[in-house]
Length: 198
Image (cartoon, rainbow, N blue to C red; front, side, top):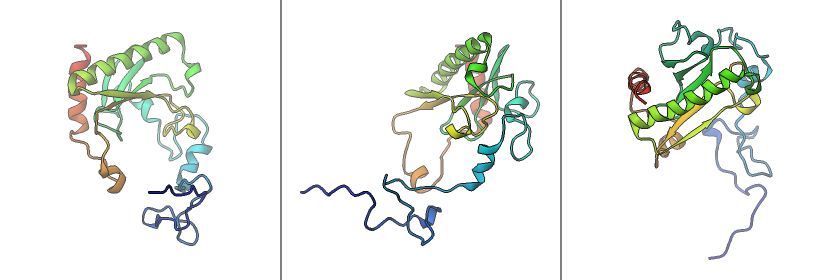
């Protein structure tokens, strides 16, 4: 079996029009790097919006609503300076966000006490998730700024995403559907109980 030569652009691009990734002529929009481009001009509002507690749609920051309990029923635990809340649009079951109460966008802007409590809450989140679901691993991190992929760029939040062997399958890739086996409220209740025990 001979190896195929590497091409900058495929001779026959695959049909991406069914998922909205087509160029002007309906063919896939592929460039020399071989990557498809998904044009999402609706996200421009996030890129152009300055850090503030009002998002581009005029809604208040979702993380500024959570600490006092008003407007957010998915808070798992509250500390002195940060809180843990379930992601309303989770990558996996148990996907938590650790957020400072203070509306701050950049990690270096956290004060020393916020930094320490954010780290401690991340550790507790991992322990609580392991205790309730036996996660095999975690993705932990922050997307700082809209250019880095932050959906809510004006309010720093750390993702704690549990992972399991085989947790990716054809559903999100082919069916563009994420299967979540548990309601968010039930996950919140389980994690809340485990939080005080770990």
